Length: 275
Image 1 (cartoon, rainbow, N blue to C red):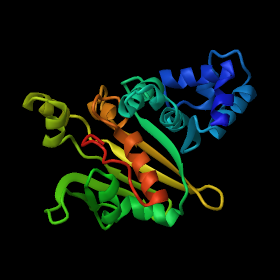
Image 2 (cartoon, rainbow, N blue to C red):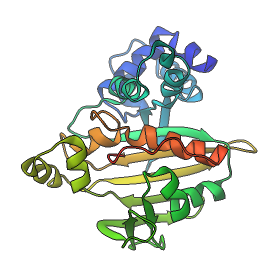
Image 3 (cartoon, rainbow, N blue to C red):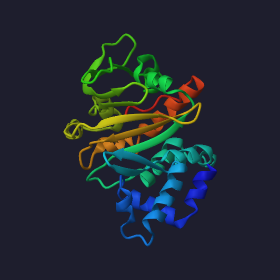
Image 4 (spheres, one colour):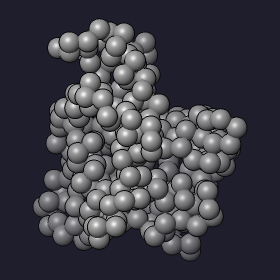
């Protein structure tokens, strides 16, 4: 956490975070526009922010896109904010709103966390039903994880797996996994108190996709980056998965439970249905 506080102490770096808060996923060239800093200075500041985990860089072709990463600030919330009797979920939602808010024309969500495990074990946690059921709100994800195959949801150990229209897009064991996301379900409407008309409107949103990128980090840890994008403008699903929708912990909550399970053998309390 010392690295986070040192990174935030510099006003130029805070300004870069403000720029990414206004529009996430910018290149170095875009971030330099309008700043009274040289390209080299901006690059050095971004390197400090990346080292502190406050910014995640994702390559797209020849470009390197920079995204805010709320994981370090969520860690601060876990350590200190609870002492003031704030509900953990509310603190996460506030932080998500502050650090992950983006223009709704092209919403996306990027989150990086570091887990003490191996790429093989983390891959198992992402793909094996016995693992997913323990941190995914009791849901087992079932697939053969071949490109084009469905990803089915099994709500109970003896229940019939449900087809929600999800398909595997990329499957590179121990390195990269991507699949299309589901739409809202009746249980989400019940959880959030939506009418049939409100649920129908949300089901008209474009189907998004989630990507997990796994990289070794030192001798005993893994860097996991989750990229969730391809949302419709003004997407309610984007608000849900990022934890901005009241009553939803989203990816921050679910990934915290995944990390806890892999590192300790026991998950956090089950996430909400909106995760």
